[in-house]
Length: 473
Image (cartoon, rainbow, N blue to C red; front, top):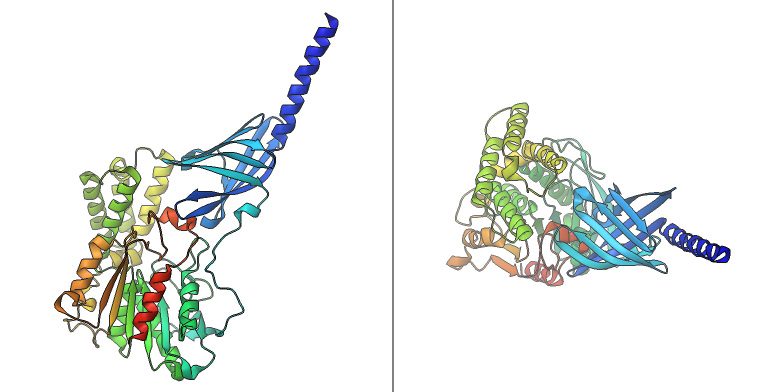
């Protein structure tokens, strides 16, 4: 009997030791990539054991999100379960040598994925990002703003033989503070575009937005109209310092940049052509309403409710009504709180709703947003109008079928009408690329949360179409 007790105790101790050793193997850094659609998203998990307690944090490097606390970490033998409750995120897996094989879930999305020991599996994969050496000249420039007195920093790429340069392109970024490469989730679309265009024979200027990167200036009170003045300063700089490159100047505007480009062309003149990618042809209020409806329908599988549409319309009216900044913020916040049950998903926690109210209040009271909501780009795009000091140059507008931010269903038809496509104007073009999203990537879904998953930065066909259009002018 004594021997049996010793054997049983020995077996129990052995099992406990084995389980403890296995559990300790989870401590440290783990990385992997969440597969989705045409790409993947890096995920890093940091796990630490103190006594019997596990803690950890999570990083999403492609989304520039680091140190996200794990709300729960459970280790039982060779099994791991972690969660971030506020993000509706979880991962459950089993240890297998130096990897964990399991399932990642966030909201309704789920997929099998593996985590590997260390950080190597999270290294970004952006195959289109250009790397030196380059077969063209690259010059960092400092541009004095024509009225503001501050400097705008940028990069000018140009063919080595200036006499063979076809013309010069100025790239104009979309809304929000952007660097010269329009960097988002590790993608650098303007660097990719500049590289392609310069290899094709064009000089290209791309700059950090005012108040961002290496550019000075105050962006807090800037509107789309203000930002057009920044591009005019860039154009004046090129014409003064690089006259051999500026016989032909083209403007390529992305998103809000597609509003700025015709502003500059109509004001300054002498522009050889415009390319507008994902550019609004309707007021900003309609852009905001349509993109919100598209996101809701994608998330729920159901059309947005009439109640939420009405609430958003009223919220825009509250934001654009007269008043000083303090009054505007107060009425936006008050309206959001009173209508939180309509504006926010019932699946959101109270903390998430509170964050949403603060974000809405901040964004909708911003001078840029209030100007954007009421600005109508149509008069400057209308080839029959006399708006501005100069006629609209030959223009090509490009829309993506997967764009959930500037929807082609809302903007493309009107753009065709404004550019005279339907009445036989052959100088202008409107191009539809069915699989391209808002930031010019080939995509499966088109929602912003997919951007970081995608490996491709700019659709190849889009770049070929742009080069061909510029060559034709």
